[in-house]
Image 1 (tube, rainbow, N blue to C red):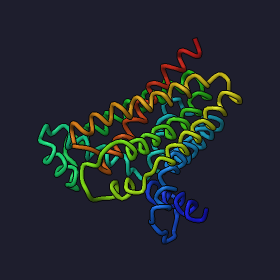
Image 2: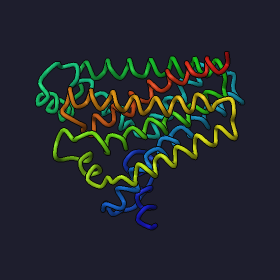
Image 3: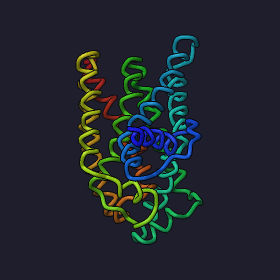
Image 4: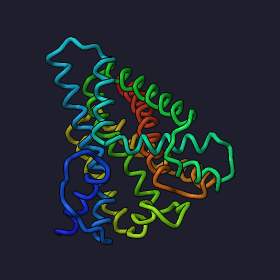
Length: 264
């Protein structure tokens, strides 16, 4: 149990800015604990964004746009921008239209090119649009999305560890993937089942969007797997970061559409 707790701390140490100032072992058990804890990192970042949004909504006259933008910024800050960095590097490589080997070289370059900058601006603009539109419909739907969507977008990482081959035989991605085993998927689906059940039992009006978000995350994984193999030969740390950020934005679109359906 101690090793799994260390794995939870490891996930927050790697993928958030929360101050976990401990030297943690990185053996297989800790890495397994970190992998199944990734949705909790997303939930924590979403919780921080929701807290700020709630304070602004209750105590200030700030517009929906201002609240949505603040929530998006805080969520990105709490994760340290690590996945956004992966999105930019992947965008640079993908839009170079080079061979797989050249694309992997471009992703390893610490410099960011024009395509990386344009891709992240487009990503955040689209996400902001659907955050704002959801908030305009219902604060409850917006608040639930801030918690649910980062959770499901990080589930995609575990699916990649399970079924997508690595593009390189070195790096953090390979290190985590080497610790994967089937029981992690069972734990992940149990966590998802508890989350979905909570909304079905406790928040009847939003159980349809939650289930659609979960199913969409599975479909997104299938599409992203195919794209990553075709474009990069598999996954890298940057490709996984792009999967989280791209998945989160696409899930906000699904969330908004499903909220419109529920409200109708």
